[in-house]
Image (cartoon, rainbow, N blue to C red; front, side, top):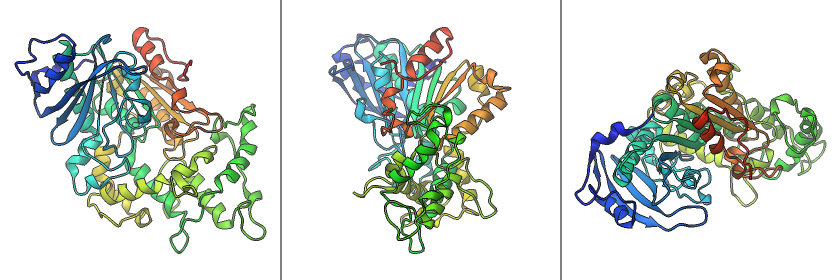
Length: 476
């Protein structure tokens, strides 16, 4: 699974054709590199800092508008390549330090001596929930959907050939959320491109998840005047009641729900018997909770997306669903509104459209074009498996925005398509993590965040000697 096939697209500038020593002068010389379908915009040396080595940072553009960053260790390159996905609607070229978090994490590869790369997926955005770039722009939607994956890989391999004199001997892709969707897209659309793939909390079906499900979550929480029914402040009350009923179901009272599917929660005891207050739930609030747990359905009661919001995710609701007293959070609303306005439909309704406008009877069918660009939830991994690829998929059981039930559903269907779970396990490993927020962004009751996960070490071992992974928890 090497990408040297792309070398035929390279036209090297005279100043770099003979300079293959990995030093500052060679790094700066990369500015003169010309490649098919794009150009280098900058090249500079970044000093070593903390756990990151000194490296050459190359910025390039793959036409029409994919901004790519490649990071090349000046010494100690391990001969391998690591590509990072991006989060949300992307649009922000990531940093390699810890603050990049779930958005663009090149750090895990760079720390280990990999040459690394990522992209903004083909557009500039004001934030990761800004989708205005997609307004009647199918080319940008295509680049965000899948093309930026292969273009980032192609351009990075050109830089490796010029800087080191050879391409990489092994390639790994890692991403979470939208990056997880990209990981699945890579396995399905480019099955021979990456030897190893890590997919975290994958938003693998964007039209049904962001278009349908998130609109549903917002709509069922609106009163007759369009105001939220369940707002900030009740998450603690609900979460405590859920934990009291579900914590010990797995046999251990440890403040973590091992599998929310194993617990049937009854919150009727919290219903207000007098005046509504912070210590009880109104009938309308209980109705919202029931619909959130169920997930989206149409008028006939047909499930439109697997599962709803899992028990145990309540500590994270302020960020994703309800907001907080300071007006922060509630990102599901921002994602649903922007996706529907600019990215979802064959004809974009544009500014002013909100999740309240989504029609569950007719609108799912209106997302056919974008579904072809964005969605990567096919259970057929036969081409990736035939190429010898290894894939680790992980998801937090307490994910309130990208439901873990979809990932489990996909895995079960992938096992069936492969001829059984034992056969699938030769190439794909699934880890469901109790108590973990979406991509481990926020720390829950257990304190676990993404920093406590390390899927890279077991993937490297799997690729090196065939040792199948048994855990993705960090040993540190």
